[in-house]
Length: 174
Image (tube, rainbow, N blue to C red):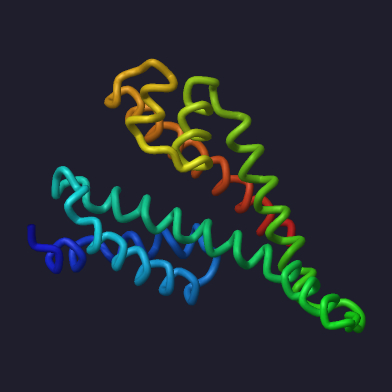
């Protein structure tokens, strides 16, 4: 498998996807680099070269959400460290805005997931939110791996469309 050729062929589309997912170019670049490293290390898990872009996109999406989780927890960790040192915060900080924005994004995401039909919602929750393996999700739901993949693909597309629509509406109002 020619990893370099696959990367050159698909990195731009995954980068554009990460700009939308992560919200800015800097995080998207960091996420793409991290995702490429993870993909290279786990290349033996890729079953078909034709699936590389989707596979890399899924890795990058997980990396982005992990980054967002860390960013959301950072103000809490900083506050805990300051309190442990006996210091207090002086007024509001920009981190509060970031925390509120992250909370709002999480709420939008959860609303989009809740709006999914049950068969898609269950697959999405187990695979993307709980990060279980595809095989484990299929086993728990008593469906074939192929059915799980199909439902997951439809669920992700629906969530992405919902978020794009909601974020587009918010951008118009701001």
